[in-house]
Length: 291
Image 1 (spheres, helix red, strand yellow):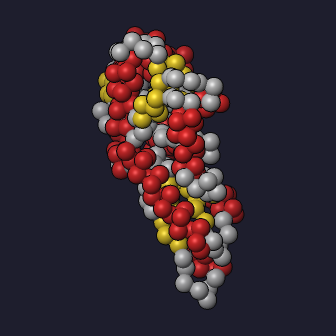
Image 2 (image 1 turned 90 degrees about the vertical axis):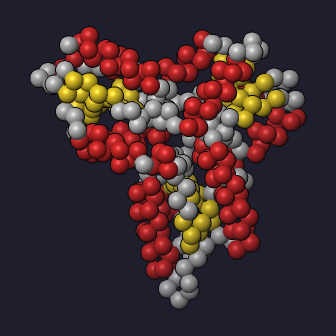
Image 3 (image 1 turned 120 degrees about the vertical axis):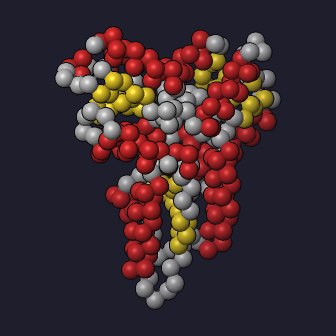
């Protein structure tokens, strides 16, 4: 059986940077806390826990004093930094530069919309760590949408500034932008449409759409390796499934079914921006042993 790992899959720059920062700090032998899972992949999180990384939730941050806390690639809202100052917490900021830039863009858009009574709209997954940080730039007034069904949250008679979580589909963002603009023009035909869309998807992530479509079409079956809580993973898995119906989502060995490989001679393995290469290689070895 031929087994091919997609070399374009795996950690994006932001995740690689955050893990490198964490490992460097852990190497100093002092306690290090991470505000949430450093990456949406349980296998990688457990590996870092074994090295001494302590995962805490936001509600626990206010109880910490004189500690060292890692901010992961997803970024954080302003109150996290205020809490750190109050509690003498040293923040090790590993926020992705792309996310930090997006936070700044949204903050400027929010200041503009406050003057005109407009709205900040963000395409993203509500409750996602990155989205929480983005919404925090708007004093939690931003409208979060994740599908066409959410578009009824928008008042089309008011100005709109539209942004995207970095790991969303660029094509979907453009599609929703067109719908929002059309609805605003229909709601206020006598006035110029005050709408601006900022395609703030990460280009390193968005280009994987095209790469994955090609990869999924080249193999009999696809194993997409990802944590099920990964927003980016679910989007990219959906792309694989749209091209190759014989695509399966797996997080680790227990998810693999032997019957998938009956009569199959070619398997492709790929993953999300939160999937470590060592895990995809492990899955490949498991399939070799099955056969």
